[in-house]
Image (spheres, helix red, strand yellow):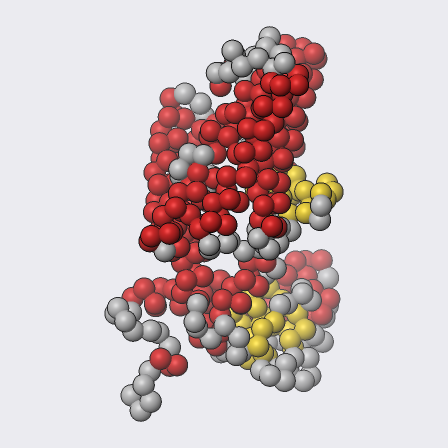
Amino acid sequence: MSWSFNIGSIAGTQVRIHVTFVLFLAWIFAASYVSGGAEAAWSGTAFLVLLFLCVLAHEFGHIFTARAFGVKTPDVTLLPIGGVARLESIPEKPREEFLIAVAGPMVNVVIAIVLIAFTGANLKYGAVASMDDAKISLIDRLAAVNLFLALFNMIPAFPMDGGRVLRALLATRLGFVRATEIAAAIGQGTAFLLGFVGLFYNPMLIFIAIFVYLAASSEAHMVALRAVSRGVPVSAATMTQIVSLSPEAHIDEAVQTLLRTSQNEFPVVDGAGKPTGLLGRSDIIRALKTLGPDARVREAMNPTLPTIDKRRPLEEALQLLQNKSATAVAVVESDGRLLGLVTAETLGELMMVREAMPEGMQAGPWSRPAGA
């Protein structure tokens, strides 16, 4: 995730902190200091740090359960509104998604039980409104907030864990794609409700509402892309009418190519026609400013361009775009020569064409009867 930095790893999963989380901690410290002095500032900050350690434990509940089903978990990022664990793939078996989804809230329930049983935490102040009251002991507030996290995350609205549970239950009857559409629609409706309440009670709810709405929309779009890419060869969404660059070309040549074409990404190929990297529009502008027009393309290109054979299914190219956080995937011939590029834009265009096709028909020459 952009604007985040790595602070270490736990069991092979990177733990990252978003810049906004650090700013949020600083804001809490300053606000507490102004209202109650140094003691209140340190107490409020300590509570917030412990809270996000509980959030981290919540996310690792998801991570370890996902690993049990063979799903890789590269990293988890802490944000001001919680944590986001990145799974390399979404399990489509309802039972697996159900167990992965409930694992996080169950961790919070276990933490609350442990605090009550072994530290004497008292939940008589369990109302959410008392969680920021410094007069209540830190342990009592921590127990209460863990129960709140468990209940809040089980709201049946995507992208909360409850939304994933709902999708898993619906998928047993309606299929994964339709179940996602319903869970995402409920999530978007919940976002509007949170935003409306936030206008009158707590502006923080508006921020949460925006995140929920965007996350629900993004998940629905991604699942739709996965559905449309199934059973389709990668060549179906390969952009072949493209201009490539040589590693030894000057940045000035790349600028001229950028201006006379509609491309934003340019594959860089060697003398044998094999891809060696990718030069994007932002790379060209940055190189022009820092290296000058006489610099070589190889000095500015991104050398980590994922590749896929043209005979592979399109779904694998989509996974490469997601897992590698790449802007494009190079489609190559059997001998490694570049055939074209697959990007998020070409996948989106394929999805629009598929949706516009009459029922029962498929887009692409591979589905057209011979001689038609």
